[in-house]
Image (cartoon, rainbow, N blue to C red; front, top):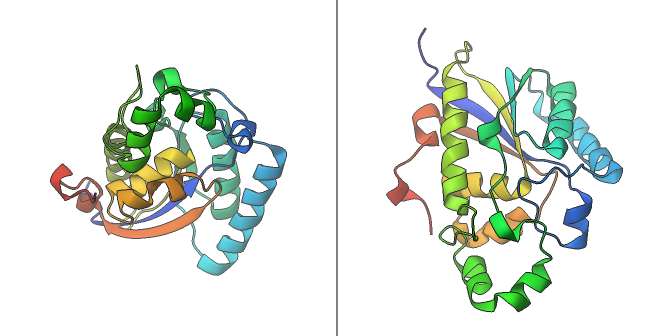
Length: 208
């Protein structure tokens, strides 16, 4: 089977949770999306489906409850078979999981500032860096797309907002300097037209 050369990716940050609303860091914890956030995502997907007129071949999703619920809405709006992949889990925040942002800043001011200033390079205690998380997910996504039979696959990637923002930076769609603005946007939809090979660029080409 010939591997597809070009791909349309619909990158979607999953619906927000109660932790998002209260300013807690959400990594890989099992936290459900709020009804209001799911309703908002549903409405956005409905509007996008009418505008894009796009039918998906595949919906790739991370394993979190909020992400799986969001992926179900994506498949309802755009079609496509859903695959839940553990390697598309959100960034592992280690000991920072569930921490309030303000409290973390007060407890670890230096490292927290470094994380805000250089998000790709800081690794939370017992966790992983955003760059490493993006690399892990990007490789998994590329491998899944390579198995797609469509000549020009149309694939949704549904992940938590922190990972969605990291993937946007990893693929050169946005600079890492814009990371925190993007990471705070749940339920966002971005269409990316790329060649398959460009989904895993050389690390040296990743924007700072």
